[in-house]
Length: 379
Image (cartoon, rainbow, N blue to C red; front, side):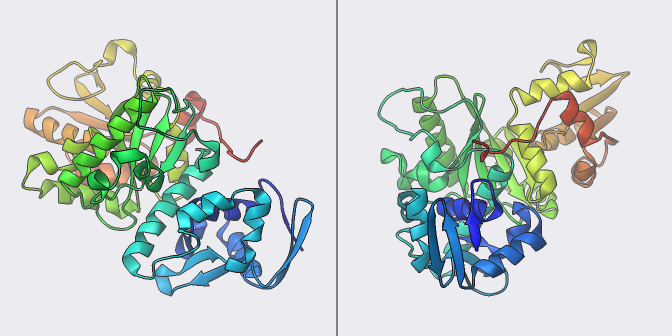
């Protein structure tokens, strides 16, 4: 018998699917121990007795696996949806899955998978993504709806807010938005490919998101994005941006800050850093002496000048800022250094090859910033 208890692996799978509808099998590793989760999923695609609270169910299966190769996807078995009724979350699942109806083409499935991976990363980082635990957004008047603590709204929830929807966001690759301590991050997931920005579509998405934030929070910045992807996709995204003929459509013209987050365990830790209060200012305080810091002044964008060397922190994974720093530094012909985590070294060396690189352990920074593991399932 499988016991569905709050916080258990089976419970997390059920909650995740209730939020996103379907999940790519190739990304099971984002949820934790891949071997353990695959064994659990294997068991739950067979006949099982399942206990949810005080109720016991005999089911032919809880989940089904559809598709082939990288498109293989995990879904609920239609006959097992009573589990969601018992948990009181059926309504939310029906909304996201269109009453358990899924498009069969690879384009729609790929978009669903990008959204699902972003939600899984947020869930693992302790960012609330369950719609029934989040305030409902509106666009009728200025209200205080958005909570201070980190929260992730799926793109579907953003598009369903009144008239802000399809005509302004139908061409964007936006998969959702993270709100955290006075900041709003547009969220994209490029997976293993370079990000292909959709020009005016992304500008319209940014405008819509800024308007939505303005009507649901009194003081919030909307100039940043989180870009999920594989390690190789970050440098490719920058390289492709350099080939964009129209400067206004380049990614760093749309969002001033583009924080790259790898789709792995390190990315989950990076996400916790980005959603900690005032993370940019606190990183600078940890790394640099007050007399060395630039405080946003100077001929170009850097964080500190130490013994004639211009230093920039890449600990927040800001690709747009790294690109500006590299271009400005080469133009002024000055000595430069970039501070980064070990997993970021390769990106820094590819983008900012003229600068020296200083590596700092992630554990040291997390300790100094007092970044702790969060769990949204701790009641």
